[in-house]
Length: 198
Image (cartoon, rainbow, N blue to C red; front, side, top):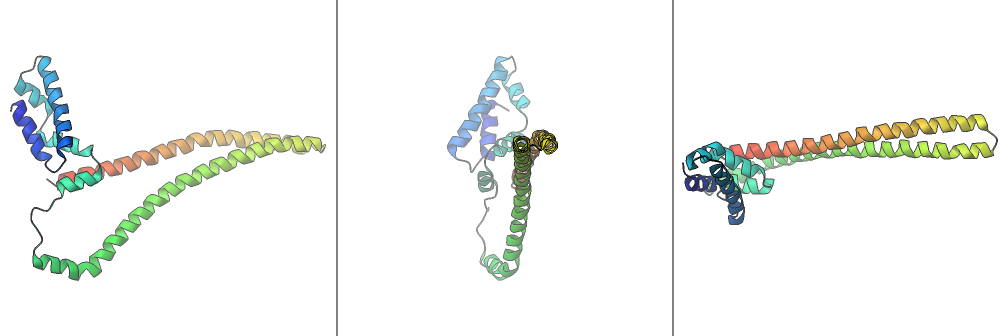
């Protein structure tokens, strides 16, 4: 396959994207093929080294926002017939609430996960604040001639500040994990939509 044929085939798979998006993607892969040809490969070898047209199109589409992917890959090939519209309308009291419930449950799970992260940050701040308040309270106890209480407060304050510092790294890792999980779920959803659209 020549470079021109390869790029035309990739453009065909991306039908539905804007011309500027297609051009940008094709320019990138055209440059990659040119670089491989400069390294000594023939045009056919450089094109073959790129991978299949379907793989390239899949890779390109995963880089676009989910709304664009749905628009590109899930366009109806024909309009709805009258009996299909009637069935959709008659079935809407059943399928519409079920769809809404499923979406609400998914949204609720996502909100609960992020709420847990917010709670972790609140606990982190609370532990740190109590630790600092305990250390500051040490001075008040010394002024009131309660040295045993002052030492107890100072030790507890140091312990809480130390725990807050350690807990901070746990909270950061948990936040990074939720971001990573969100990204993987979105990427998986996009891949699923791209595959179903084929």
